[in-house]
Length: 454
Ligand code: PHE
Image (tube, rainbow, N blue to C red; front, side):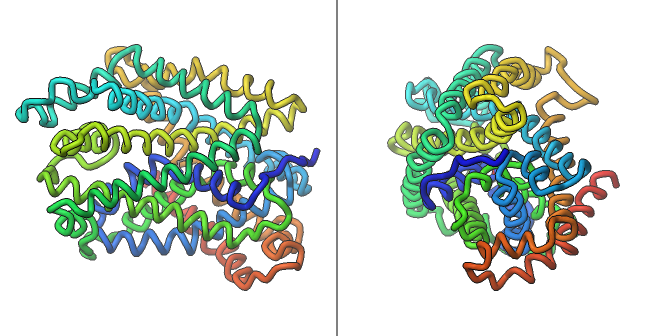
């Protein structure tokens, strides 16, 4: 059944799509990857991956969604695809649901830190300089993230917020929320950037972040950059297919893909501009600059050393929470749309069907962070297992088959019809995009997959 739901405005659909793309991948993965993989050398490779591969794959997902006008499985079916192809959509939904289980927990952590910043708990007892060290904040982290109850409560709150937004619908829920959240995110980002770039160690920080070191570039640098680009742009999870099914006929797909990718890249870069000047100004370069330790230990150390500690802390964790929340909504929408379309039930029902089980699944993910409970699969915590399988295996797999489908097997002319809006718009890049989808992207995503097993 073809859908009639649509985003109400161009800005709204871009805000929603950027909301999905901008998440923890930009905040805690990108800056650390850049710094560890040769600074500007990595950045150049990353930018090439975003535009040469990310944009074409995004256009492919858009084309399937907007012409199929349904969820990630239904869109393939509406295009007349046979079973193996719509199964690709099924794997995408599975991957997105796996990610949802732990992303809800991470979003919960950001909410806890936001609340702990507002209430002052995070800095309680940090008054004496001796206490503003990493051990102090590692202690806070184990209270906030390592406890049995707080992370669960926070995760449940995030699930309920998701429910409230998703039940209201695409236009009034997702679009309206994104129209408020995204400008807020950019304003906070710019304020924090302004503060960070005027710190005494700013130039040193930028040098630390971006110093080009081509000697660090190896084959795995390319794979890291590509994996990062796919994750950060939310590719291979049915999200862009689902969102594009709400795009009006007049939306220019290539232009939208380029705009979304540029904004996502901009946020990632600005995050680096915020983090590294602050870290070098207070000589914290030696500490862990990756993942959760960076945002939950090192940055609070920075804030503790600055005047107006709480102001910056609240702003930063609000930024992080907004980034995480809009991503969870987009991931959940994949399944909500799937259940609503396939089972032909109202959104209300599908939202409940999708979110209710998360109270169980996300609880297991959250508790698997506590080593004492021993919730592991194959030696990894349930949390890490889901992350690894979904992002490192299923995501490139789906992306590969999506490209093959649009490049070779979709109804002839699908891509051309979609990128030119049925002939009414110009799309000079069509030939290049088709070439990439047919040859380059399947090859590279294939290499990512194979390299996992080497
Ligand atoms: N793109 C998001 C980020 O950069 C992550 C994400 C992954 C969002 C999967 C949706 C689905 O963090």
